[in-house]
Image 1: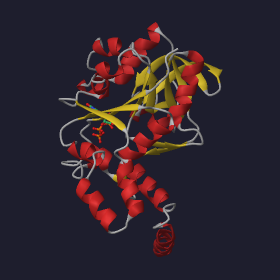
Image 2: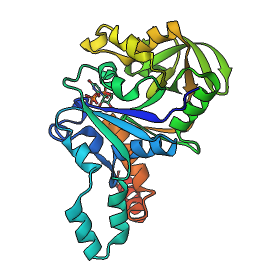
Image 3: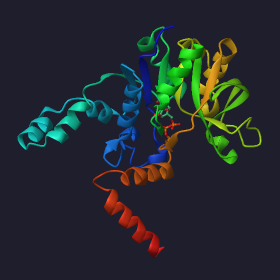
Image 4: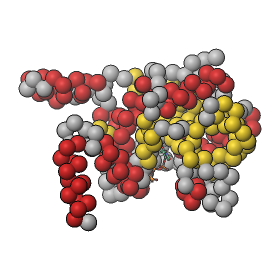
Length: 290
Ligand code: UTP
């Protein structure tokens, strides 16, 4: 069995939920306290043993490339001022095997993943979306890799969501539990209305896919919203090979929505050594005034 060493991070969406902030700035560059969200995603991939990462970006995504590039002027200034911790922080972002490709038009997540075909070749790979940040003892990407090492088949991360929220997600129709948190799946359904949703297990932004997904993507017609839906291609792949669902029980932060983004910022701000005490006091004061 080939080991999983490559990751793809699609970051070419329009980010309409964060307008006007995302008119010129990539949504993935919005920071949680002081770190761009895409850096958290890259760190999760690396913690799972991923060696090469392809970022699929679009227009106005230059800032992502610049963020992971070296900045000699800044580095020289930090060194001259003796700010060595900050210097190390800046240099760490360049010490990664990152590749970039453009998605010429935002034709959907499936189309974004298809741009990775040449990079991936015939190896299994993971897809990580910047809309979800996750935390657990074992990083979620590593959990998916562990499942793949048992089955040799594609595996997606799912979480339980409130039933009325199924229309925001791809949802699985599980057949049965076949292992630790692992489900065999009858069907993957994109954004079902709650009265049609086959379960409350919703796909979140971590996928481990076999390279056969590219043939399915090439044959997938635009679906909901006129976009090539990754969920549709996964559903076709499941008819050829098994695609399993791994239920994630760790902490998930939905940073693709405004409220999720704010909640995550507060939670991380309450942990950050430079902000935690003052932020706690501020929240207490606000709560008393409300
Ligand atoms: P979203 O559905 O969250 O879309 O895409 P979006 O454009 O980023 O954000 P909103 O909903 O308009 O606010 C899920 C993921 O797929 C990527 C996005 O960058 C995001 O990581 N994506 C989506 C692409 O790379 N290309 C696309 O054509 C669509």
